[in-house]
Length: 195
Ligand code: GAR
Image 1 (tube, protein in one colour):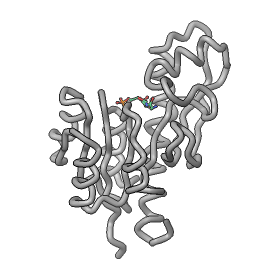
Image 2 (spheres, protein in one colour):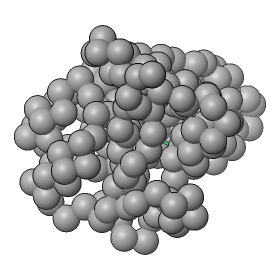
Image 3 (cartoon, rainbow, N blue to C red):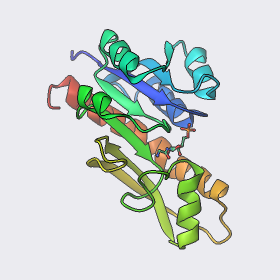
């Protein structure tokens, strides 16, 4: 039996993507990895409640230096940014090179980069008038939303969509499916020593 990949999930808000990963772990979609830590940069993030309700240890981030030390102490193999809305510095990225993945709520390279997060991404898609959007899981490097793409899923935009209705559809039809599957795929590669 392979050792499970030790996962830290980083969050800033509601944590519906964290919940999707927790649920996938419970129902066996994620079997090669285990969430051992939830990290938040916001003390009132509802995602922290989700961690608590599921018996997962959590950590409130103070500085990147402390965060690196904490993740090393916990022997974290994979860092999953699941609605983590702060841009990480180069020390952190270097310390976990090829071991950080992120979910972004558009089809990269559209509507991404600095300032494109959360509802703003859907506002930009509606403003531009595209008919299809979606979600992307990618590796994190020093360019915001610029790392290698792991998986993408398209979602249709409907007449009369608001940023809120579009966000909900992108989450339900893309993010909550794509992210857990990518977490399993990458966890398996790490467990097998392929990454
Ligand atoms: C999600 O839509 C996620 O893709 C997005 O923030 C939301 C967090 O929701 N992330 C970004 O925009 C990153 N640039 P959640 O806290 O309910 O998972």
